[in-house]
Length: 220
Picture (cartoon, rainbow, N blue to C red):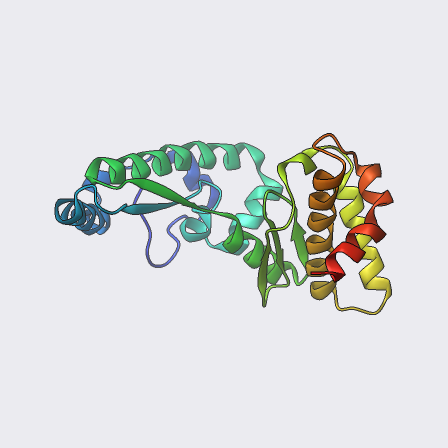
C-alpha cells in the first residue's frame, strides 16, 4: 500500500483484499514530516507544543479510491469496507505514533468537517450532524455549532433538534440557515436548562423551556 497524494490507487474494490498497511517510517513522502517534527523538537525542546495531525480511517479512503467509489463501497459491500477500515486503522495509529516518536507533543485528529462537506456536495442536500459540536453543510458552506453541553447526550434531544429545524423551515427559511439556527438554538436551550434546572434535565424540560431560553437569549 502506498500513501496517496495523487490519483486514487484502488481501481477495483477487490484490490482491498490485498491491501496492507505500510511501515510509515519507510514511506518517502512522510520522511520530511518526521524530519521537520524532529528539527522543531530540537529547537524548542519543551518550551512550545508541537502538534501533529492524522486523518481518521474513515476519511483516508477518499484519497485511496475516490469519493464516488467510496460511497458505493459503504452501501454495497460491508465486508470489504470493514477490511479497508481495519487496514486504515492500523495505518492511522502507526502514523500518529510515529509523529509522537519524532517529537510531536500531541496529535490533532482531523475528521468530520471534510467528510460532511463532501457528502452534502455529492448528495446535493443539507446535512446537520449532531455531536459534541454540530456540523452543518450544504456542499457549499460548512458551519460548526458550539452551543450545547455534555448533559444533552440524553435521549430525545435529537427530536427537539428535528422539531426546531421543521419550525425554521416552515417559516420560509433556506434549509442551510434553518439547520444552523436550529442547531444553535437547540444547544442554547440545553445550556439554559443546565444552568436553571441542573444537570439532570430531560428533553421534555428543553421543550418546556424553549420560550424562556429564547427570552434569555434576547437579553444578551
